[in-house]
Length: 360
Ligand code: ADP
Ligand code: MG
Image (cartoon, rainbow, N blue to C red):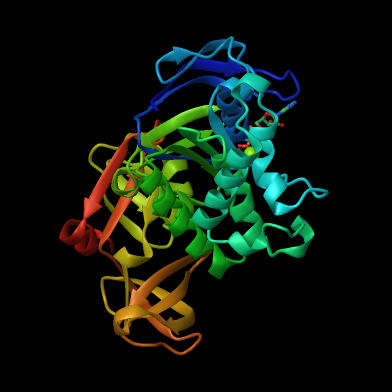
């Protein structure tokens, strides 16, 4: 089921800025898209508009090519899972899942035997058939999450909307449930939109990620593009776990406090922001020509390497070394790649050999 959102705005009049400021995006049928952004950026508002629980002040929403402006929520054939699952506490798991079918208008309501069959099938699908007679408070968080999913799927939606659905799960369960939900999406041929503020979750589950900042989509790309070519300093800060350094450009040189400078072709004079991924920052024994630092901690990491936190003046940077350093030991930092953003958002990526020798 394709989805088109065209120039949607929504202003509740409660905050300085509207919750949505001209959002346009299209989901292809069968796609898994994540809406990623900090709290308050408008993610839930957009999801509620798709579900028919709220309405845009301007703009259009098309689901499966149909303008849904006049289509009430229950006729949109959209399944929704909320952060808190919103299960009915006084109903059994079975009745929670059956709910969406029982409240249908009489003409579209399946017979009781058919509802029974469908609910059993769904509980088997989400792998909790034995929990049918229990109440929500008698099952674990992970199991509640599965009930919420089964309930959303009961109406056989072609569009599945998930609003921070894994927040209440502990880290270990969350990883499993994510994989499982993505598998279910693929098997059932759904189109899904996941709202999350967790970049790892978005990058792991989605085919494409829309990054939201203050009511706008600032980048909509596959995960690898967000990492390799972030559209702005905001995206670079929000995606991946790059070290961030303030810098400035003077006379064609980019100066990073505490590190010296390097050629800054393509960047205008003035303030700049630098991002260096831990993977692109090598920690070495002290060496002439490289910026000196002090190791705050080192811990063993994959592939025989050590991950370290290094202090350089006021900065704290994470990088990797081939061996452990004592706490407080002197070291040197070698930048193997970095991305710089100029004052007006100009992006310059500097890779490998170009970066390292000139950073002194
Ligand atoms: P997110 O899900 O990204 O955290 P929301 O979409 O919930 O963000 O909120 C975006 C902005 O709209 C926030 O400033 C929030 O306070 C405001 N907002 C959301 N829903 C309402 C509402 N029903 N009434 C008033 N303001 C709202
Ligand atoms: Mg939200």
